Image 1 (tube, rainbow, N blue to C red):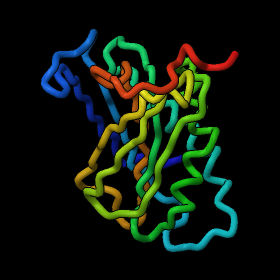
Image 2 (image 1 turned 90 degrees about the horizontal axis):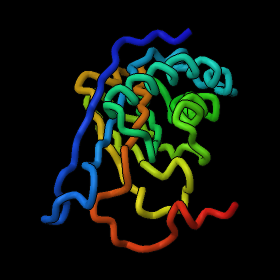
Image 3 (image 1 turned 45 degrees about the horizontal axis):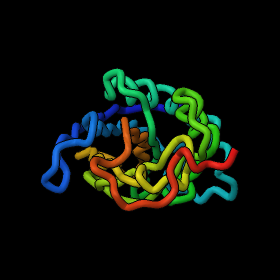
Amino acid sequence: MIEVRKYVSYREEVLVEAGRKADGDALVKAAVAAVIANPSPGVYQEDVSGNAPLSVEVGRELTARALTLLGGAGVVSYGKGAVVGEDGDQEQAVSFLTTAFGDTLRNAVGGREWVSSVTKRGGPGTPIDIPLASKDYLQARAYYDAVTIVVPDAPRAGEIVLVIGVSSRARLNERSGGLTVADKPV
């Protein structure tokens, strides 16, 4: 079982982009972080795969909180990330973001694509940009975005910050071209 010290949430509604109002509904982006105890701070682990099953419960909680933050808007893109404190290493962070963790989000929102991710090492107040991509077609460029979250007092040396990010639509006034969700091969 993972020890969670705290949860931190961030939500934004984008109404105007490039001086133009939204071409439809506002873009809502949200991120939820769980500050957890690193199960092996300061210890090099030959095999970190044992952390993956521990992440499922916290993944479910983060997903539920992220969905609440969207306020009824459906999830169209998602991502995940982690920041590990100085007594940990990046592999420990990655070990919590495996398929088991990602599946809690993907299954809850009916996603068909893998959940993009990012990990890094940092101290308290390290910002993390969660990459967002379409839940239905990873190559749909209109959904490439990010949501940033900061936890001012985390991660401490023996902690890991786990994050799920979601959005309600493609970028506002998207016009970069490329493949769309409708272009996904059957």
